[in-house]
Image (tube, rainbow, N blue to C red; front, side):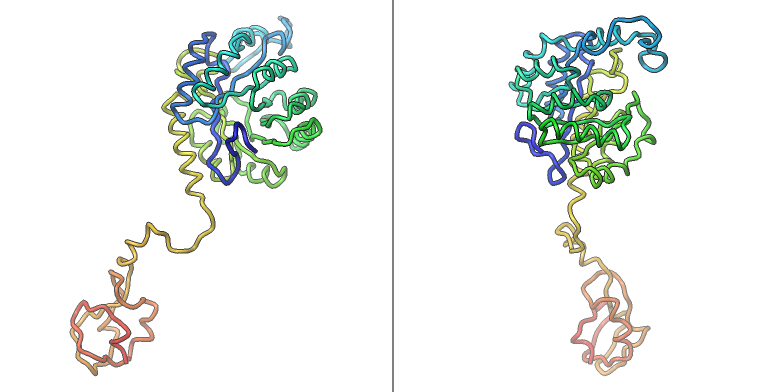
Length: 345
């Protein structure tokens, strides 16, 4: 698949998405700075979230709508989303700024009106959040735009992932990717079971990546070695700023390291190759080979005590030692002479 002409798949370096989410903390100046910092760090894209409290839930103080435990303990859903949302009148300014910096900006829509807004802004792709992966109507509406789509699969079982994919396909999506995800904030690395990624690639036949909510980069980098072509991480200017998602987000220096190290991990994968590598050529001469370890004269019989396998590697290969023992020497040799075919009759 491609987003803004950037190819995404196993044959190219991983596509790095910096998730801004609520980390602007209600200040558009922070949103601008996050986009700039993501660009500087080397990310391919910044992702935002397009919703309001009213498009995502209802204003209720009943028990169903209260959050107990975790990062957002004590908030109602409505209060949290009202506090955390990205105002819709910011969107055009942010999209214009991202285009000015030449970094891709796209969003997770949470209802049809959000998709309509993003279409007006010519958003290049859509991301369906894990919590919305079971909302087939939303997936189909986003798919009807014919834009590339990424679906996070946190909390979804195999059947639900199949259903989400079917909804995207039936809605008209031709370029589709899925992200292995654990919807814990933060999530422990031990919950990620990264061996699921190659199984997802085989089972669903789609470009597959990782939405990573761990606190460092280890899990994300490891996922590249198992086939992840996309990495999404929450990104903030300051992890201690006190925003809803700040505490489990990467800071600029961490994102820079992720961009660098994920590409290094991808580069190291390469392809199956048992041949000698160019970087090894200078080391060949230090491999072991056969050398005479005593002065000898032409006509002498070569014995185990007159020849050894040692470094460096200018002589015959050590595997030839048994076939050389007992042979006759053709010329005089001194200690530390590399054994050559010409020495042996």
